[in-house]
Image 1 (cartoon, helix red, strand yellow):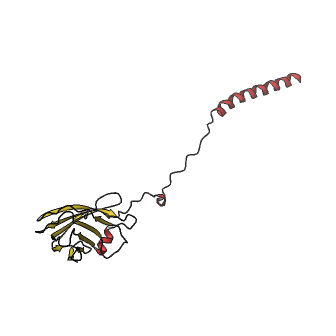
Image 2 (cartoon, helix red, strand yellow; image 1 turned 180 degrees about the horizontal axis):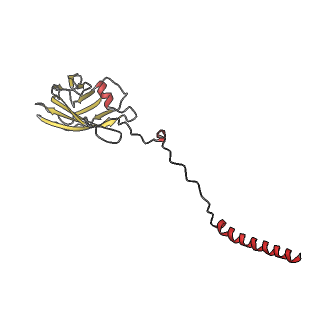
Image 3 (cartoon, one colour; image 1 turned 180 degrees about the vertical axis):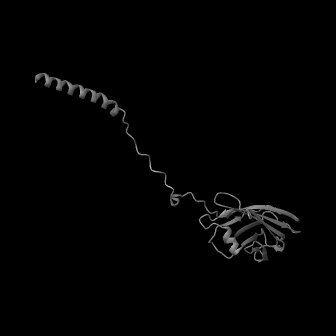
Length: 209
């Protein structure tokens, strides 16, 4: 009986040893796996990189005045301004008010205007296409009898968007007022010439006031 019990014990020990040798490599070979990340969202509503609609505004103005047979003498001054037709101080404007130099007889004088009123609305292309622009030439004669003969006015305007790109069709537009003709002299005479366009930038009136 004791011999039989001993044989059984030895057999159990041998079985346990064999099972331990079999189980170890199986367990050591098990690798933990990580679930794959969820696929990237294809929801188009999350896309925020949308193109910006260009807004074109007036960025530069140049004016050329043709002086006729009677020159503008120094130090008589000229103030030239351009803004949206029919408006007051709603929009910014462009101005040049330091033109004391002589403008010789039968010659052209070209100069730029500077933007003023930066706290006001921008002069957009849309605003000008609704109303046109008004150009005012104010003559401040050094003395009343110092007359100045104007025989033509040309205005060149430039439009750019918020990124500085020129408008594809109206980047630069030149308007010639062939009817801008007459004498300006000192106060209380005729001191001002006013030139107007329509919304298509066609030159309309050029009156002396």
